[in-house]
Image (tube, rainbow, N blue to C red):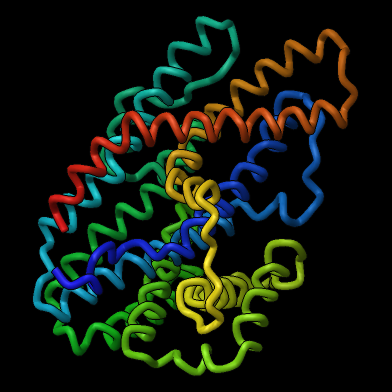
Length: 362
């Protein structure tokens, strides 16, 4: 196989981005649970409020990588739906279902044993059914089943996207992929924001974000974005706008469609800037890249770690050892440390087994 097509779904400069996005989700959830449990928290800083937007960038990134991969194989007449799904299954399913199982055990068994009140306002069978068949976004919105299960909503959206994108692109002629994808994205974006389709917004069926990432990837493959590489000003402005997006309220437009349109375009351009530029800049720090490799685990385990830390801090709080500032710092430090440890161990001793199998389906 040509080296051009090895590791098609991974671009080194994007690995640290995965970790940063997972971290933004963590700092979004930490004050929420702290507040819920009566612990001190800080939430009025914009960067602490961008967890959902961080997930949205994950979606654009997934669309960028997945559609890029499919498009490249289509150009070689080598795209296999079976191999595509096997690779997605081996990467996503093991950890997803591990968290699903743990989540139900935690809320239905562990919390009652610990004497911690929590209301499960759904039948266990219904919950298992909805998470097993990848509609946790619907399940989470209907029942608020607890953070460990609620964070699975984004994995559900991605799996739903995979189910539709592979057969769609398989049957489209390779020269028509960009046109069809562009029309599909525009039509769906309009439909999503129509008042009569509130259900799409309620359950966050934001497929247009994933499609848009794919459009940027194909434009790059067709060398239509070369102008962004010629002048340093373009990557600088795009990166600055992205930084302002996450650290200020400058781009938090009141109109939902305007905010989503801006988000879709900016995130696609930012990911393209990191992946393809002529600045010769690449992040080569092994530790930071490893954090990117285990970012899936960081995202999936962080609520478990947070629950453990909050439980411990509630016990410590009764001793009145630390002031509010120290308590907040300890919650953040311990949550990050335990999450990264769990994700590392999971990657090394659990996920790697399936990742090795995944290489057989290139």
